[in-house]
Image (cartoon, rainbow, N blue to C red):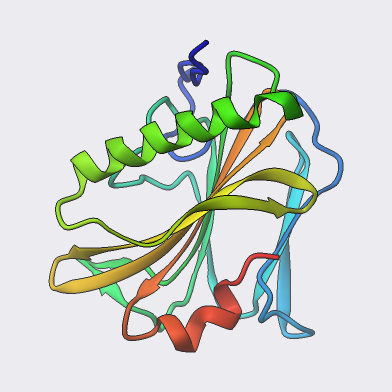
Length: 194
């Protein structure tokens, strides 16, 4: 059985939002302490903490997509960070996709195959994409899924990106933690999603 993302309903590209509430999904950027802000989204319910002073942006346009239409997106970016073609790239983006099935734990092997197909599609879209850390199981905020770390060239910079694919009910959450490779070690504590 092929698991597909549902077509969007006219909402902005970036992250798909379904009308299902997800009560306990938490994403925290680990480097955040008392000098942080909290972003909270109502439907589906999720929130995350991010460094004070970082720029919050909603309804983002993503250059390479992983298939399907996104209904909603939100990202936070270091305003003093790397810019590629005038766009800040050091930060974290959360995208939510609605699936055509309700995910159960017994489906994780099937989901892994689908995520591998998504990654193959990204590799076709992005020349020079290199896998730094292969696909492994991951859990964020109690949501099971997978993660991988990739690098790719973009307009004279090399970007490092850790992608998380997390599942809850009929939703897929994609979290993207990204920075210029020269800043990756410096920003890793800020970008670490726990």
